[in-house]
Length: 530
Image (cartoon, rainbow, N blue to C red; front, side, top):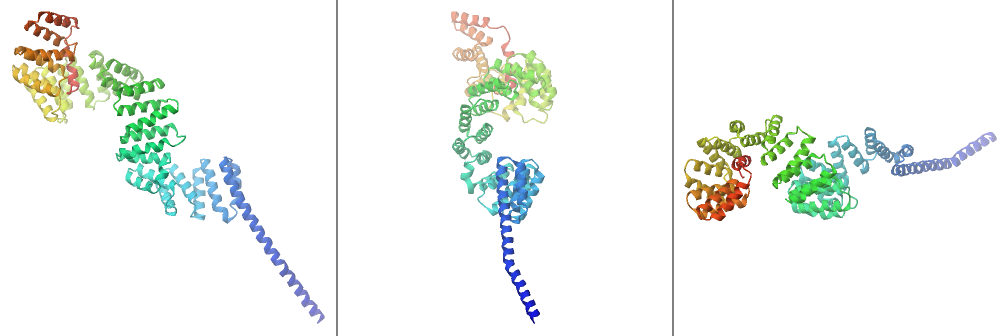
């Protein structure tokens, strides 16, 4: 019994000892788990701080410590995904973010980061899917709405993009990304008023890169908000150094405003910064030509031609300006070369035909025009050009047919009416010629050639006061016209104004002795509105 009792006590003691140590064991186990959790959270926090400091290797080590705890594993995967992203290891980055989302589907940051990785990998559909998932979890998430709105804009769904922006519109207005998206949508929807209103918000953004301001200004200009575009670029010029891109785009917006002088000044400014810039040379030449500053235009084309001697657009511009300056020997080879480089463009052949006309190579000009007219019978300018050349060749019935067809296709023009008047005159029908010219001048009183011909016809009809008025106007409009000055001198003599006649005839003699009427035919052939 003693033994039994003793044995019983021993067992009881042993059991009591185990019961005594069990709470201690549990306590130590719980304490170790708590320490582990605390260490994992601390490691994760350190990893985040190290990533922000750019110490990626140390951050990697701390994040891996946090992987051991299920409660911090998702966060650790997200941090490791960020580290791999900054190391430009996109595939590894995507794998970590995918694991983080799998462990914790409500990690919005991981979804947004993974969407950015997919965007860089060109996997746009996957990125859009993730951004939509973020909106399902947080409908006010600005980053996701920005990304989705941008995607809709790029697909041409401008109203859908605006609908996505609407719930967080103030955030879009305070973000350069958001304002660019809104400006692009308004530009494509032609909402000038809404686009103009964005300029005030852009002005308030601090530290914007010049490239972004230029892009924003161009979107404003595209929408029609040209004053706001100019103001944006001019402010950028005041706040920093001038660049070629800024000068070039300032020129462009002033051109949209039709301020040709300011536009040309800025193109010159751009060319000082980049003398080899062909777009600036091209635009500057075009503006100079539009302002009839042909020598200046020619200087730009010569510079451009030195840079790219076989550029067909440059050869066309060079040849066209030479043509307007009566430099036919320079115009023809340049235009011939341009046509050989771009044989399917009718505008090139038309301009070459004008040069051939100027050189009295009428058959060659006719062949070019007939070639490009095939299949383009509804082109009023081509009909006009062929009619003008046929007139110069003396084919009056055929010329009349083409000129009348040109007028039928485009009633509001000058050249065809002018040549029809010449045909009527040459056929001995002066009253019809006078009627056509008087009607033409009612609509276009500044047409000097029509004034000149009408004055001569009225002089032949002995309608001297009306003839004097038209010839005086012809001389005023074109003081260097030999024929207008000479005809006026003859008229004044017939009217008994000998002193005035002698003076006018002396002016005519002092002018360069060339057939100006013929030398300017190519201008009217170039443009039926001339």
